[in-house]
Image (cartoon, rainbow, N blue to C red; front, side, top):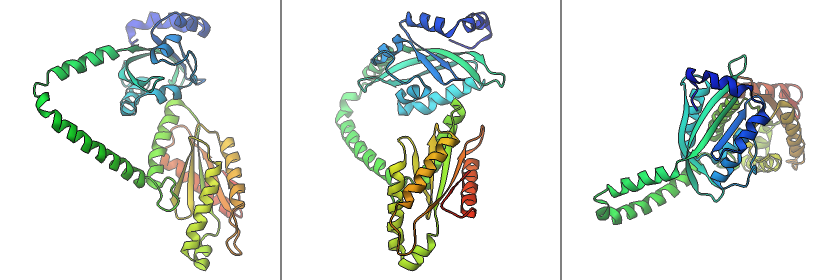
Length: 337
């Protein structure tokens, strides 16, 4: 469905329907229909949507994360770019073709069309509906035609197979190198490079779907004397023990990263300031349980912030660092915001 001037009468009629009535109509439609209430975050998907992808009816979470999670990773960036262009009114239509993961793990080509029914006073999206249509057969037919047109295919099959094997080996090596490049060599958690990439994605998602995002900056109190008095090997082992304690408290979906030296950051998607502060207190108490190094008790200072609308990753990280400084200035072994 396209957001054009010619559709205004239809827009007014549909927007007058109650959610229950619209969903009742959608239950009768065989295509995969979705209805996103952006103000509440609730996404309704009709039985046809579930049947198309092979999932039991209404078995998935009614949120935008369900949609994000079924999109093929290679198609995700392009889909989101088109979606953003439409909701930000840079283009008059939303239409995309991409692959969605089915219940059995395979992927299905779909055509996705969406239409904004209503906007809020600040011009942000209030409600949007759309449809996923199965175009897998057409896509497969096109692929078969392309294969038949390769007149030299028989002559290069053996070479292609060999190149494929080489590519697989290279891909494995590339994946391993990428993993090493995004992981701290000592603690094995995410490094600064990985953190900055995740912050960009997390801020984009929070802005797009108006979801909360919190960040916790952490620093081990009086860590330098440990290195000076007991040596860097003891200091390294202390860092590893602290990270093990932090990881025991981190939730699935959060990202713990080493920012540098004895400073760490924790990215908390879809998390409010209050929840982040409660988690920060658990982290602080967990680190307090770490065995002392000689006469030095291991404690942690933490700064907690929640992302503001339109705030960049750099600005958010800077505010978290300032909150951490306030925790240090307040006497250490504490949580500040």
